[in-house]
Image 1 (cartoon, rainbow, N blue to C red):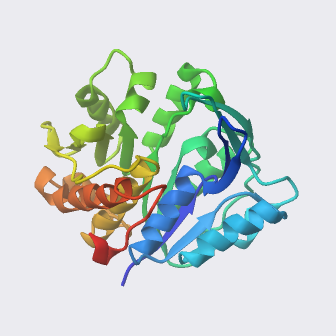
Image 2: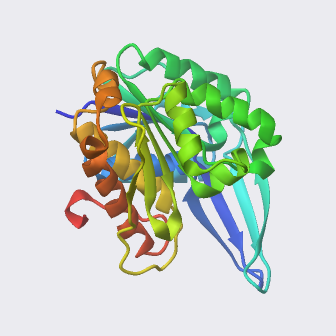
Image 3: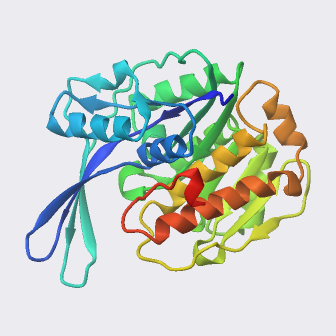
Length: 305
């Protein structure tokens, strides 16, 4: 029986306006994408976020529920639902304007929670970021933690302060996944191997860096060597949501292997070899491979892998 998984983070509406002035709205937010991805992979998923009592908030909640995600009742407040507005020029380049609200209250762990995933804007934007820290500390007594920094410098501010915050959360996490772009911002003078060594030194059992078309690099706490796997991509329509899809597949695979999801899993993951985590890496690559072959942040089911 799968443990319940709790995802904590932002869900928002992306408003994209093209060069002709035509606009379209889409449900977005990295943690929301991960929640949907995990639910599509047959995990029981709760989601703690911050939505307004407005049309966009109801649309986001309906989208999540339709895909099998339980939105926690305390995820609604008086502020409007967050919006990220992108305006495209004739070349397709985007300029962004954000209206973000993250007033997440203290999160009570739902009964049966064995794992918490968090990441992105929610981990640095106050006042809700303090609630994120609290829930990560709380779950460590009964389960495990995964984290995706998903660096957005235009929103998160000073990268030096962000780096300190990232390392604080890495120290509370069992699995950390970041993109090579994240690492270029946070640690411009260090290789992925150096950063992964730093992160397992802080306490993570598994560190993973996605390398785009070159696949992934990963490091476990029990070994000093680095594993690498190539991407599983047969065709690319777009890369929207690919990193979130990989994260969902990775967490799903680790839960299935007994390396996340219960109090003993932390030690099992710290003792695991590169070969032990290999099937979970493969599931992450498989899920992201399906996602990039479809338009938008598509989340595959197990029978599509």
